Image 1 (cartoon, rainbow, N blue to C red):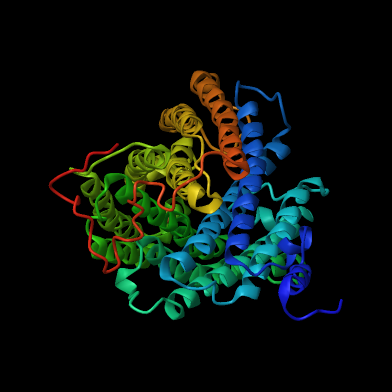
Image 2 (cartoon, protein in one colour):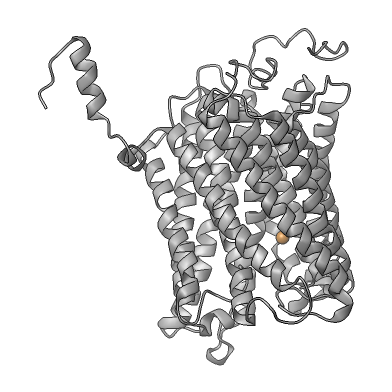
Length: 528
Ligand code: CU1
């Protein structure tokens, strides 16, 4: 079309140059658009992975086999894990990073805006591959999300689809991380030194390094499975001189840092929310940065605590036990700082704060059960029981998911320009925290009593706790639809949010040189 320079016609023409409708989303390089797509994608995958969890809990509602056959059950545990880790949690925090990091450091957009688009659009095909591997003869990898050989070397074509999906997901998250590192290191506004950045940026900078370091290791591990399957290698095949335990070492060299790839951005979100609702700066900012870096570094040297039962030398067991316990120290620093931030603050308890405090309680509990499992002698007893399942769901659900909700409620007014429905938000929180504990707390007891994980049937003595857990799981699942209602309502309309919806206490200001508000420490302000 012929552009007529100047005037309203020009503006009109210009509007037509921008792709509209679906093409806007396919071609966008805008960090906010891409952030939103990440968040919606992750919520969709959360629903898919959640439905799989409910299939598992339906089968475990009572002893015996009722809902699915054992193969299908195993596929559900595998895909639930893979989808939640790579499809739901990681993209959710990349979504937060896309939305918030440029705003927080004063950058115009992410450093590689087109690569950003590609990072996102790799996700849907990977998700489709992963999900449809269920429909393929042989089914999805019925191996658990860890994809241990020899099983994964032997099984059908669904495994190839899962491996390819993991490759694509890895490429996506590496590109996302390169973008985050480059944006933070090169595109900060003048005066925004690293140690003045909001802590969320710091946590993502550290996380991005973890992703870049360990995702290629996972890619290597699954590629070795692929060549064992199709190209005659014997990396993990004892008959050919290989060793399946080698896979476990490689996998967990990725897998333990992966836990922190999930947890550290969650720490970042909570470190923004708690100061805002305490009306105080974050306590111990520098120590937060150092503690987070320490956790990231330590995460590389503890991997074999997942494999105490493979028959490693006692010296190795002791080393991995003590190295693992060491992580409790920087983690303790962080928990102390969050509590100290709230101490004598002018606290209010809107939904983001409730989810943050829920995170604080439950993540700490998950940390303690992690300490229990770090002890070799204890772990040998609890290995592959429901105690482990309970432990990592306290870390993953109460840790990552709760803090993702804290972030979503906290930033929804900024993103949409509208306040969300506080009553519904609080309802969502209370339903979630009750049903979460109902689902997972009892699994500690099941594990201590010896119930094995990843088995569709169980002995009669486990019936009561499993019934409670299953009812809790369905309650938890249904409660998450409340969030969908709140988010949609907030996007469509509602009361206008002010530029600083949380009483001017957003936290963005605390770490830049502008003077702290007068009501910082000793004299709490009166909250209207
Ligand atoms: Cu670990």
